[in-house]
Amino acid sequence: MTRRIVLVDNDVEMVRMLERHFQSEGWSTVAVSTGADALAAVQREDVDVVLSDLVMDGVDGLTVLRAAQQREPSPRVILMTAFGSMESAIEAIRHGAYDYLTKPFRLDAATVAVNRALDDRRLREENRRLKAEIAERFGLDTMLGRSPAMLALFEKIRAVAKTDATVLLVGESGTGKELVARAIHHASARRDAPLVAVNCAAIPESLLESELFGHEKGAFTGADRKRRGLLVEAHGGTLFLDEIGDIPLALQAKLLRVLQDRSVRPVGGDREVPLDVRVMCATHRGLHTLVAGGKFREDLYYRLAVIPLRLPSLRERPDDVVLLAEHFLARAAAALDKKVEGFDKDAAAWLLRHRWPGNVRELENVVERAVTLAHGALVGLSDLHVEFSADGPARGGSRPTLAELERQYVERVLEETKGDKRSAARILGVSVRTLQRKFK
Image 1 (tube, rainbow, N blue to C red):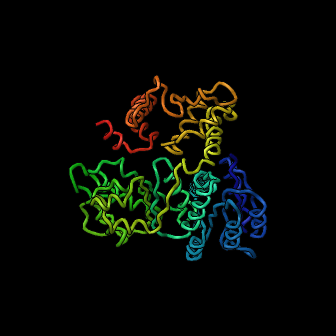
Image 2 (cartoon, rainbow, N blue to C red; image 1 turned 90 degrees about the horizontal axis):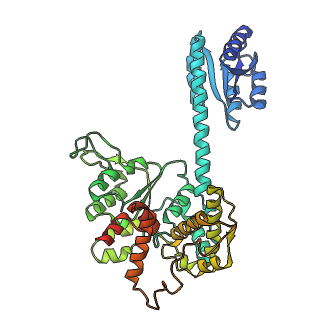
Image 3 (tube, one colour; image 1 turned 90 degrees about the vertical axis):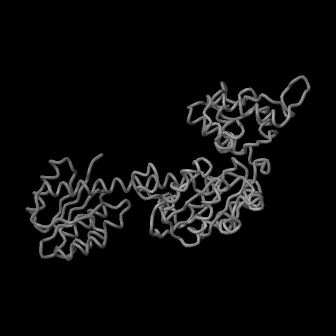
């Protein structure tokens, strides 16, 4: 890409020398000797860096800086100043100048400063682009649904996003609780800060405390260095605790204190670290039942359930099944570069008839697999890899028990994932720990 720089100084010889130098460095230059001409160039040209004298007749360097800041994306501005104007240069830095050079300076020093400014501009632009892509992917507008249940949920999400209140997302596995958490975060005032997601069921109990709260060097065997916890990583942003019902009771007490005091003490530490973090949690388990059974603290439950949001299962939103299936089909077809345009009548009927115990996650996986297997423009019933009729598998009129059906389905998913339990758990919509318990 062509690198473009505006050079301006009342000293014409200085400008010519800088122009020759930066052209030899491969830059495209706009060299002028008045602030007014620099102002016009910045407003007219798409440039990466401006190297401007600070003190000039008429339009000065600060005015050029302000004009550059109005552009989108804005070029980085480096100001040149005499030694006696150092205070003015520092003030310019406070107003957004990237750097300054004190005259006289070496040309190689100017090259270093300009290249650093260019790298900074590129990094900021890349960061802005990535944030825009994330917002496009996880924003509320990307959530699909036209059923009354989902339209009501969208309204609640918009209202919740405007606050910093703690949110508890409740729903069956596979209903999209993390997607909703991300949508709330990216619609909130914290969107430019990190969202840190933690699956509490996927982290061993022995490591969960250290992961969340961090630890000091030497706090326990193997702690060979200090580590910031995920709560601190989420400072200024949002911490999403998925499967909150799986947190051990001992950690529940410590988490409650963090939420109350807005500070965290690392494992082995002797001081509190202040926190500014919004907490969102999710569970597919009935926390009321866990509270009644003494497995979840009642005070923590009420601290987390300030705003409870229930996500409907796919069975409760049949109007959305085909809409979601077509979305997943288009995405999979594009990824595989296949011309698959939709579902035939039998496949569409099966999609509407199926109960979808794994909810949206199961639907997504079924459709992606069907697109992979499809040979024509339309996905057929055979492409969906349906092994069961609407009433169960055809086995000479006998009907399996729910346990048998579950075992068959788990074995089939494990076969598809070649024994990868983590991938199988994701498809089934359960935690790895739950899958391991089923094996036992």
